[in-house]
Image (tube, rainbow, N blue to C red; front, side):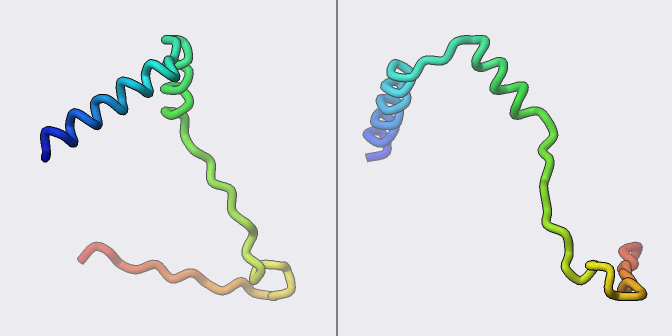
Length: 65
């Protein structure tokens, strides 16, 4: 059964490479895009809208234990 799954997986991968081949320059461009740092966009915190006269202090935990 395990051998049949391996053969089926190989056939699916071979079929995919025949149907959608990629040129070497496309692969290189894809690898460059994947290695670039990702930028995460976040929405501003509503509690910091400017109405609060003093922002809430942030407490850090001591991790040196």
